[in-house]
Image (cartoon, rainbow, N blue to C red; front, side, top):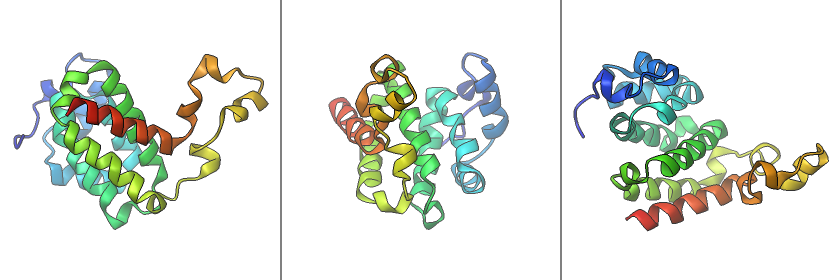
Length: 165
């Protein structure tokens, strides 16, 4: 897709999150979006979760370019944000994700190959279900145990995208 998404392609259901994404991304090229991610990856990266699928497919390459750039060194927050975005979109829009499954599988494999670049804090993003138990919470009632390990989440994302190819 080479055309900048329309406001309606960003804001499909008129939710507040989509309105925010439209405010931030409407009229922006992929190069503009990549620069936005460089300025505040987590702020703008969160919009990718909620924008419409056409807009997501248009802007995700800009986020991928940012994550692969030297500017993303140490940006573990965006890696975690992307995992959640991809998991959500796979759950709710698997057919839309099929259209970019190869590219997203390649991206997830890149994250795993270049894991050290993101400087993932194991205390934050690779916790265990025991961490929740220490807080008196039942981890199985919250999320499956594998969900607490960001590396495992990306491995599962690779598998899911492979199944769509």
